[in-house]
Image 1 (cartoon, helix red, strand yellow):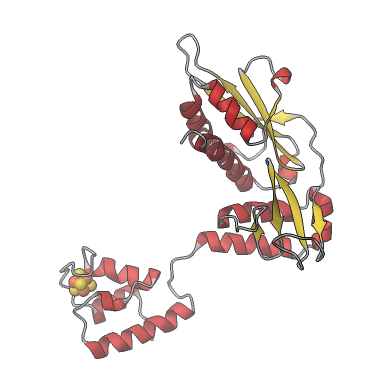
Image 2 (spheres, rainbow, N blue to C red; image 1 turned 90 degrees about the horizontal axis):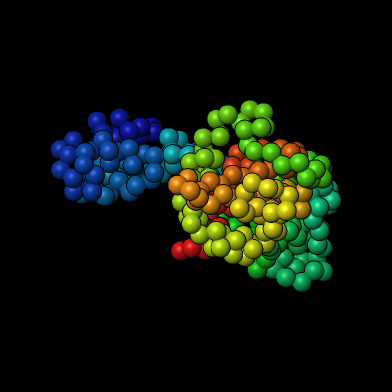
Length: 279
Ligand code: SF4
């Protein structure tokens, strides 16, 4: 019989809240055991035979995934990878403007068909199972999810050159605030009074100076994130008592190539990479 948090608390644990397990209460410890596989033996006050039987029950329910805390990042990656995996690599490569490398190609995936996908100032390698950097090192799960979402999106539109802010796209109201707090505010804080540092960071990441297309901002850099996905950063430095400002603009075809969550990931990723050069 499976053991829920309540079962564990009421039937197995001593309910003394002694804290010897490192948790303030028995119920808190029970929650960690059931949802995060904390070893039951971390409570030293359970009789050995009870401990053995209860741990066996727990092991069985873990195997079924029962009551386990969901690994959201793993689930998201699995879903995105599954969607991309349903499409032939050759078709994906043509659609996203990348190269399908075959078994004869040298490099980390020699012998395995994979896509060589331009990405900022470098390139990625993607098989049906994993996405790595140019040297064959796995990207983080979130970044792999982002790449697979793009590969699976199905869009074929070439960039139009018409750049729009996030709020100009439909159904983005809930994300505009996140863009402000997670992207624009950190950029303002990091680079206010330091436009030269921002310029250097943009160029190190492969950004192209497009200042001639905009009159108002002090800096404008465009990034080719993927061959068909472009983002432009506009930056106004502190002046006359006014603070700095930063805004990301997206090609109006961007939603053809990814969903809104991926646009947010891309924006935060760009922000993190730019600001990391200051650390
Ligand atoms: S060590 Fe055991 S009895 Fe003490 S608080 Fe933790 S679970 Fe409860």
